[in-house]
Image (cartoon, rainbow, N blue to C red):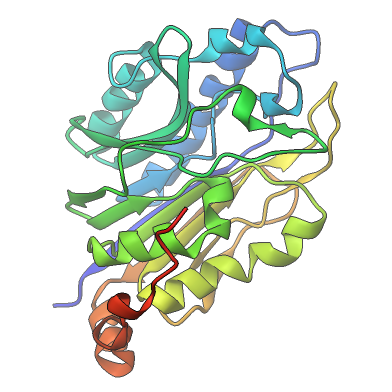
Length: 289
C-alpha cells in the first residue's frame, strides 16, 4: 500500500492595524490561524505547517526591544499549549513557528513540532540569521540555532524544518536529508525583489539534491508602518524530483493542500543514488570557518 500523506501549508496576512498593541496583534493573528487550521483539518490534512513567527507581523523590519514581549517559552508557553490542544482536537500534526525565549536576553526563531495526540515532539531553531538592509534586522532579535537539524518521527512521515533564510544554505538541507527527512517544511517571511526569483529555484533544488518533499510557506500582504515590501505568498509543495505540485496565490489567505506519495522518495533515490555517490572525504573546505 502506498504511503500517502495529506499535508497543508497556511499563508496569511496580518489583520491588525498599525495602532494595535502587540498583545492585540498577537491575538488577532492567533484567532485567524485557529480558523485556518480548522480549514486544513476539514480538508483532511494529517500535518499542517504555519508561516514564520505566525502570531505576529514581521517585526524584524525595525530594531526595537518592545518585540521581546511577543516571545514565549517552548513548550511551556501559552501558544504552544493552545496548539497542542488544537492538534489533539483535529488529530493533526502541527509545525508551529514562534519567537522563543530561552532565558532573559536569549531568543531564537523556532518551530515546535506537535503530534496528532497533542504531544510535543521537539523543536528546530533557525540556524542562519540575516542582518541586512532594508528591513531584515534579525541578528537584533535572534541567536543562531544550536539544536542541529532534527528529524521528527511522525505518523505522517519523517519531518524536518528549515526556516526562511536557511533556504539559501544547502548544507543544512543536506543534513536533514542525511538525517532521514521525508518532508521538510520551510516557514518564511520574504518580500518581492531578489528573493522572489530564488523562491522557486533554491527549494526545488534542495528537494532534488536530497530526494525529499519540500513545503515552502510565505506570508502575504504588506505590513504597516514599515512597508518594506509585499509578502508575495506563493506557498507551494514540490516533490523529490523538484517539480512544484501545487502553489498558493500571491495575495490571499490560503490553505494549500497536497497529497505526498512518500514511496516516491525511495523510487527517486534508487534512480539517482546521490547519497551513494557523494564524497564527503573530498570536501575539505565545507566545514572550515
